[in-house]
Length: 127
Image (cartoon, rainbow, N blue to C red; front, side, top):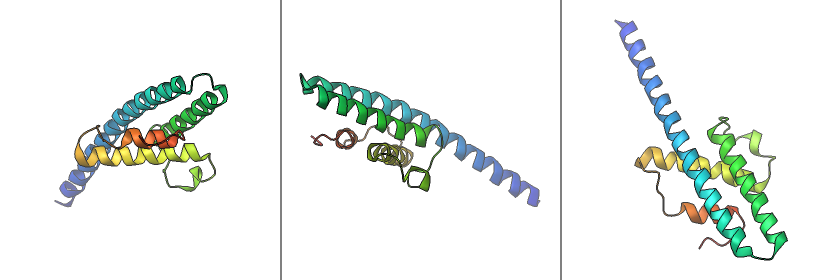
């Protein structure tokens, strides 16, 4: 009888892990597209200022690295492994963590503040 409860608990844990993994992959795709779109737009708006465009591109790469570390490599966004990384990488990690939690709780990939959060991570104004 107790084996039934153990198997049930194991099955439910496996289902939960599969759901979280699928949400993480969806969030990773969404964030990758949004970071690319917003950074491309910001670089285009920088115009002839080469240094500003290079800085935005570097921050975009760092943001994406943070997203990849959390969603693909399984790092903890608030763990010690990311405490020594660049600020933009930590912002990307926290963005991935919060986007995953919001998607799990609401069931939607859309969030009105995410674009502002990405702009902030790129060193731009939220609007």
